[in-house]
Image (cartoon, rainbow over all chains, first blue to last red; front, side, top):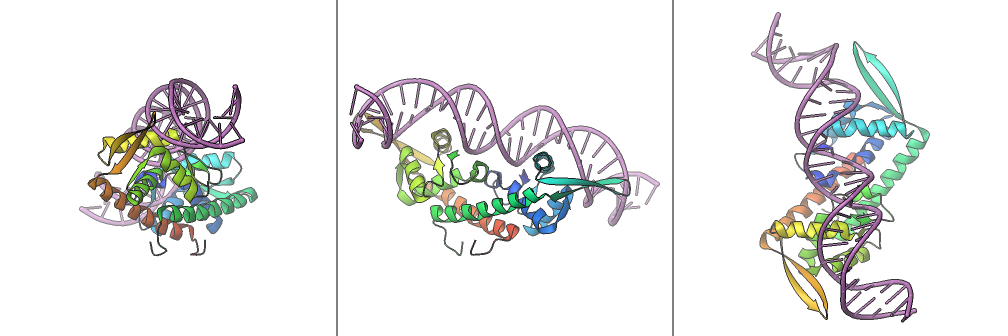
Length: 116
Length: 116
DNA sequence: TTCTTATACATAATATTCTTATGTATATTT
DNA sequence: AAATATACATAAGAATATTATGTATAAGAA
């Protein structure tokens, strides 16, 4: 999923969907490559999404009706923009809430201080 | 890994090793079943470790020299106690620090407020 | 102008990590 | 007596990611 110079890859598994849905809910419309760059930028390269993880997930989200796509020609190249559907927006909120809750539980379980 | 009534299983993937190492560093000596109960208790059953995930991991940790084991007879039943080695203690600290850092990165990436 | 890097998509083989199912056996509670 | 809890273990299968490979255009550096 990620090439990750900082975190062991196992840690990050399972968060990709949440991250992508959040990005889309924030930025309205994005294409795949743009998502990889945004995540890299926001995490200081601590998390880097690989294409082999991203594209299959995006296709899956489309198949599930979570996103719709629009293909745009940029010169002779193609960009595929992804937009959340209404149900996709709900899904994004759910996922975010779930993750926030999960963090709380893990903090208690691992006895992490607020400073950590 | 977990039977999880609250979180989607994908979210929790990759955290089991960190959780086990933390438990062992906290409680000194534990056996497998005890670990499953402790996690269940501490997380209000939000995270429940399955045996199919736990035992192979414990065996792996032993093979790596992260833990040592001691088998104790309780009546006619057997308990296998796990204890962190010196390098295991280091590993536990590393894993905890890594996870704390990971949470920070995810908070920024997902724009989660401190209250969330 | 040629070579490298960046942009932009996609998929297949493989690895990892987990879930679910199954198995064995003793102890305790109803 | 039967059901549940304790306690270990492993195997089949699913899910999710990594790594590798493929195609192609655009931009920047040598």
